[in-house]
Length: 153
Image (cartoon, rainbow, N blue to C red):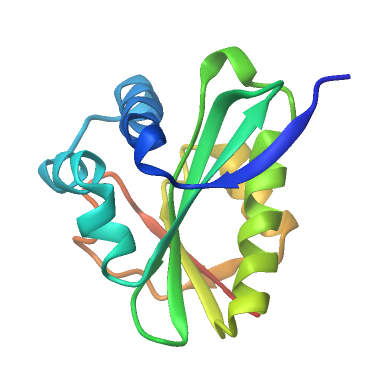
């Protein structure tokens, strides 16, 4: 049984948010200009704006990532979630989503939102499993998105 941990962002792990997300985006969609900005500058674009970045490790190796991006003091976006293809099937998506829900509760966040695409059936199923429901879609947030979901904490 592998040892799985959730660890916070450090400057030493900076490149992992970019490499994991680019791998995922290139597999399913394409990398958008805003992705390049936020993934190349995670400290400035996520952390310094009040957000959080987490990594999941398997036996000490970074296998996935997720972020809580601040929208308002009470509302954050669950985003920038990606798991390396070599670690698919370990249940890491479940671990990352549950961690974000737990962190949101601990931090006093009232609502999590996320943007996805209905073509990603397993992801949509995962989000519904953790209590996310459809919300009014905001066109233009990400070109690849066609669904917005939310979960009250």
